[in-house]
Image (cartoon, rainbow, N blue to C red):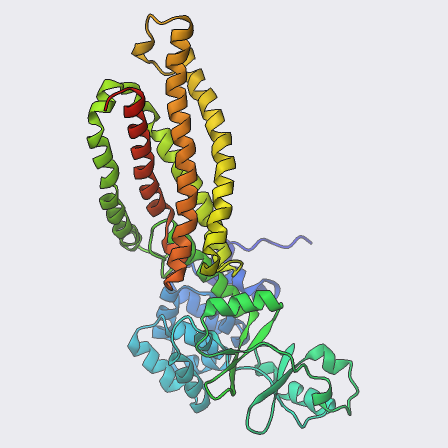
Amino acid sequence: MEKEELTLERLEKIIAEKNVIALRELFENEQTIDIAEKADRLDDIKQLVFIFKTVKSEYTAELFGYLSPENKEKLVNVFTDKDLMELIANSYTDDIVDFLTEMPANLVTRILKVSDKDTRADINHLLNYKERTAGAIMTTEYVTLLSTFTVEEAMASIRKIGREAETIYTNFVIDAKRNLVGTIDLDDLIFSDPKEPIVNVMNTDFRVVDVYTDQEEVAQDFKRYDLNAMPVLNKDHRLVGIVTVDDVIDVIEEEVSEDMAKMAAIRPLEDSYINSSVWALAKKCIPWLIILLVLGIGASVVLNIFEETIGAVPILAAFIPILMDGGGNSGNQTTVLVTRSLALNEITPKDFLKVVWKEFRVSLIVSLAVAAFCFIWVFFELSTGILGYSALTGLTGWAWFFAVARIAALVSLTLGTAIIVSKIIGAMLPLATAAVGLDPAVVSSPLLTTIVDVVALVLFFFASAQIFNLI
């Protein structure tokens, strides 16, 4: 029998009919995150409450983690203390912390109040770490094994406490002083002699981070070393938590979203696009657009200075968009490549000269190819009448050819030069930004384009003035 597709309408119908059996079967047969996407769009909070009152807490705790901050807050407001205690008991500490950072202070206080002593201590511990660090994203639910254990004792310990851990594939071996001495994967334990001491089969060559390590660096280590969990140590070099691969996926998504926003000259969103208000979205765009408007005065000044040149040869104005777009686009290509390489640690600011020299050689090839095509294209536009040029009227033969070629050469040479300049600037800006400790993504595409536009216009009109003897 074909499985019925999960839709918002189907979920609403099950809740409206108070079909408890169907609702529980839904959670047993569907991925919780898929249900959460539909549940988040329910109009009445009572519908969500019905789900939490009906479905097993092991499912609803996971469902809660996927809901929007607004729905989480509404649920906490209607939950009894008993409901909150059950929710916390079935949630991982790092998920609770992520939730609390989005909640008003009064709700945070209430949740901490109903938490048991150990959970409250863990939550407070994690909340005190600086945002966007390993300490802030780590979890305290993991399996530790004493270095004195045998393989058999280690397996028994995992069976006893493993259900409460976020992962049991990688386990952490500590000594009596809680110093981390090794890690051991579950498959190594399974295939080892039960009587073998775990110190003989554990991995002593492992990667660690401290609680203050930036989350982006943690994510890079996961990729570099192909990890599924990484231990986090405090200033005394003792194990205090672990970062798991699902935490890293969230970090990668957050970092990519932030970089995309910065490259587009908007401030990153705190919430999803669909859940952000119109006013919130507008506020993200306005500051950068005003800054770019002010910077754009440079282009206006250039046009004003060369007003007489434009008046004498009006056809020049028709090529301004080509030059501005061509230079800006080529620079943006380089900026994106260099910013990505910096983010992946493929290059560092110390490689400044190497990168600039490389981009200079790339720009020569690109500019020659584009300039050659541009000459042919502009010549074609003028010769076919796509672009009208009154100075060509009455000209024939070589006189006509040289008049058209002069315009085509001016545009193509200016564009080629603008591409070279823009690619070099596009490489230098993110490297220079990283060198002073700032995020290279703040060197946004619109900012680069604004700078290159001014350069392209100055080159174009200065060359035009020389060629047409207007200076």
